[in-house]
Length: 128
Image: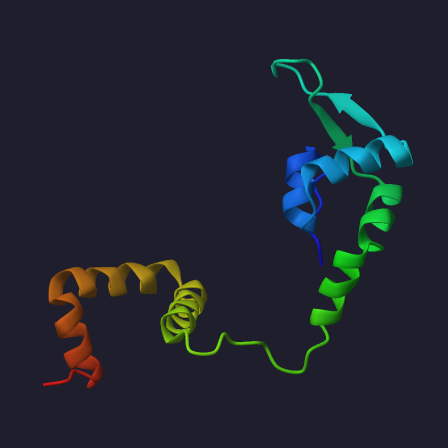
């Protein structure tokens, strides 16, 4: 599910959707979306798009967004082939996010105290 803020710049909406900011600006004009000026930006043309139901509906109906929603229906998560480091980093990140604050602090202290070699020894996976 896309995480829309109540007001977004064309660049933010472009990053969220995968389109270029120029395309988003074209949609603003073509679809007559509501905008408010963004103060403090040189040139005076910067604006925030008010994200209402019309904007959400239009964006979710675009080709790139239709492709993204189809990816959500895949039976298994996709893993990049041949990139073991990325897979391991993702797994470590998931483990760290699942830990409590105290558990993360204790793990951090253990790594600082023992180092990577000591941690691997404790886990029984150290290559001699």
